[in-house]
Length: 123
Image (cartoon, rainbow, N blue to C red; front, side, top):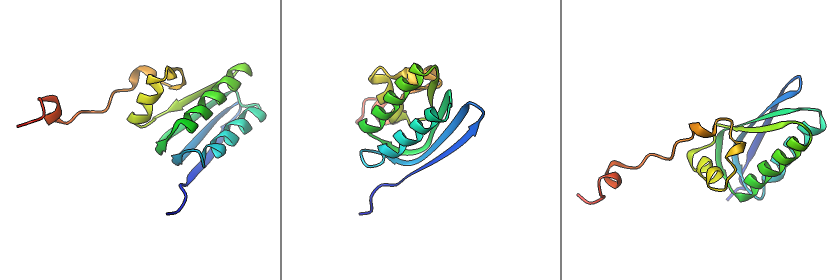
């Protein structure tokens, strides 16, 4: 089985950057995310937007990278915002009290339940 892959792309505009991630964020790939976010701070970026649309998996090591990067950004007078997480990741972010990371924390909806589960399950 090949190791999980993560693609990281950065687009800058003045003191703002968009980091687009695609693939899996786990113990093996979290250092790539950490390096990209640290480079933004090093380069004077004050607003870092992270697009998670194409992220298929993110474990605790990935969430830890986002929390640490947010702390560093805040300490430097900046901000880190996560955009478009999958519903499962958004739920973990909210359950851990980390919804401040989300660009629109109130826009996150829980995953939809199947009709059979909502109506009692058995037919």
